[in-house]
Image (cartoon, rainbow over all chains, first blue to last red):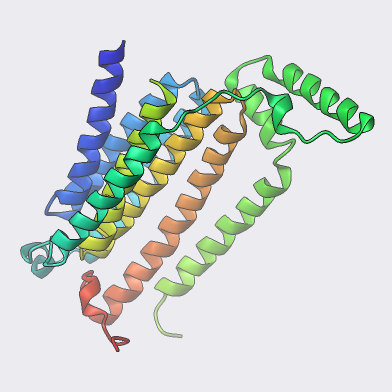
Length: 185
Length: 99
């Protein structure tokens, strides 16, 4: 089982290396596509089935197609023939390596403790304690059912207003993209 | 996979994306590297969602995918604008504001 995890993680990292290091943008995009499918498999293995499906549908099916459109609209020979990794690549590599080693050391030494829900809430009065218990009971009730059902109850319950804000964000982004890309008025 | 291993995997992806953003000169590859950093954040959200048995992380990953879609749309708008102005996707060509 551990071998499968290592193979999956290595596959994702190899795809990410392909994105960063490959010469032509189209192979970068296809490498990212395959890497995102690997990430979706990782989500599936971590029991996040709905997010895995959204990852494949939206990322691999939508966003990457948009990028490939962008490559087809702009790709020119001169850029493909220039060296893609330029003179500042080595300083950047050293900088990122230092960040990686320093933060990686800290992250590897960190301990990740599973926290029970009740300890996160701040309880001051009895009424708040009752409310916290009721919230816990509601969460336990919501936890029954499939992963998609549970996500729906959280997304349309606690996160209804952020959900609406995200829809406004997407609308504004679409309008902004049209405005940026259109010809002179 | 333990949470520590997932966090390290996310950090490796983030560092690769950071390297891509700073070292590459093609605008599209810079955007793809930003997507790598988004994927790193998503892996972290899912990892801690599993650790704390709390679905908030998974819901935030869905929001993150929505933000990534908006970023892709805006990025491609910028790309088309840059290409119309300079006839290249090379970000080094856009140096009018260099001091």
